[in-house]
Image (cartoon, rainbow, N blue to C red; front, side):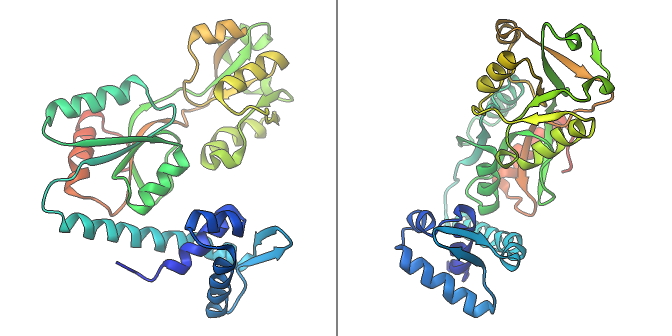
Length: 301
């Protein structure tokens, strides 16, 4: 159904890419056609959404203010559309599960294996993606639930914690920090920290990095942002890597000349979580959700 969100979707595509050409390619439109539709939306709203300067595109302050409400409205429209589709279908559809990259921990495997053993006739389809893409898919209703690794999600989502991870730092074996069973926070002042960039996962970055920078640590962003790249960079430059959840094996750390240590007074910030959008409870997702709650408890559901 058309819930009259087309022009908001055009706006969101340009806001995401900050490029009319890339947004047009994604939407299957020509660039002039997309520009005309954005201009028509701006005329209807009575204010500009973007500042256009040559090939550069930026949101105006008013466009920035509209961004999150527009995402919410488009997300609700998408979920209603999916609900209508499900109601029309006269046969059971699969439970659609999104799994985040690096979420293949034993707890996730055990949960889904136990669920399928308990409900062998239920159909399940899984897909793997980056965490931010999975949250977007939950907003749009294209998946029912997601298994993510990270901090508690934004308030529009509910979650069940399958496993919390201790907050750890990966430090060089030759460092004085490696000789500590538990690192005192004051020992971190002035030290360098290799970190992923905030835009990759803003919520995890804020909850992980802010307490460390408040201690006086200095952040470096390595060119290779993969876990292996971060570890290699830290080993080469003898700097510290924050590890809010377990990524590396002991053998990998030993080969790189690094060890893991906890920080005194730091609580877990990340875990393996089952997540879904609030207000989108269905019989399909409820079965896995209730089974998980009985099995592990925890969360804000």
